[in-house]
Length: 350
Ligand code: PMP
Image (tube, rainbow, N blue to C red):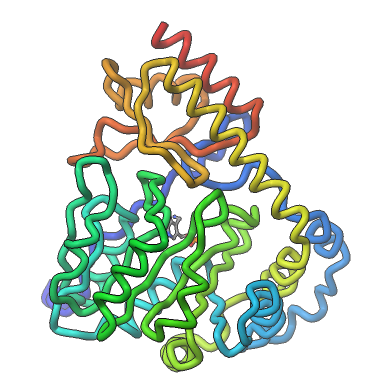
């Protein structure tokens, strides 16, 4: 068809599977195995559905204010969106507008190249070093912007803050986005660097450490100018993004810090236990500071383990993709789920 010549053709990102079956152990999309903060359930049950007649607050004030208070920044330094995917995609559109290529690691969140292609942003991938760490020197070549997750996905490796600062320092004439989707599992946020660097944008999410993937809430923190630019693009695209329940319940979740620390602490402890067990079974992995482990077995191909686990109703993530096709990304679930996983692996590998 001739009209197809004018279509913006893209190869979409492939998200992890959301199986319909209930009786499975779901360790494939880095969700939180614990429920959201108790106040979220309580208020959901009492929600005034009549208010759904109205559009939600287009400035997302309740959640922006709650986040500003929690992180000790001004509300004008916070931007909220429909999951960090929304925030990241708008950030690509807003800040990566140069003829020079943007830079990101070759093994990283596989949505980055999709957004770059969608928006026709030139990009160059910087290969990870042999130990899976980010090549800081490689991030210093000429570019139109920089983005990387910290900890990186799917490796789980955390880049120390002095290295993060080195990357920002070397790229002061472009925007550097640090995607901190997994920062709450033992990493150290780049937030303190905001005072020094006006080209830094930090993006986080409620999907992992705040147990609210289904509500789709993400946010960015930066200086006021950078947030204003982001809002200008958002209001040129879609004024009403976060729906009303997400705004209200998200703000409530931020206020329960004790619960947040409890569930992230539990996930960290379970992760460390799982690392020991996996090592005992002959797996190796980069030392994750995220809510997942990226593991390869010394003799059995990842694909075989993946298929076996699937047959046992245990879902983990596998990519049949160069460089990472002998690794499984295993989300950290509850202790019980991880014990079941390890027991199944013992049967298969033993
Ligand atoms: N960044 C990274 C590195 C991720 O792994 C994910 C999860 N797929 C996201 C961002 C997006 O998460 P969400 O849109 O649920 O906030």
